[in-house]
Image (tube, helix red, strand yellow):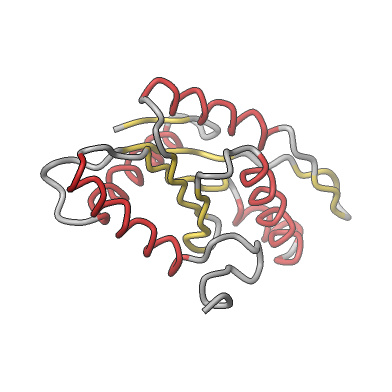
Length: 165
């Protein structure tokens, strides 16, 4: 069970584990109406890193970003590797204003990373989309879809940005 719940590359909560948390969080929201902030976080330009430096360096970038994300959040919050270069964050008891402040902090923290590769220094950035559960939602997938749309808007605006829906 521990292996299934842990992403082998990053040691973060796996997608399976993240889905279990999202189900529990949605059930709690339906009971008490309190929604955590749900972040979709995507590493900008990972394909370019892989193409120019190789997949091992791309993996190093994923590991460095995941470690920085984990180190930058509270212990009660969750970062899950959703797949590839995408992560889901679940942040409890945080206002919309504070979720935007946290997202801005994460942008700064990640953009301060420097990964040394044979062909030079890599400075990764991330794009973030944020959403909350809605009374109209039937499950957690709707909030992920909204946060994903907000994340893609961040990419359209030039990357290393945050948007909230």
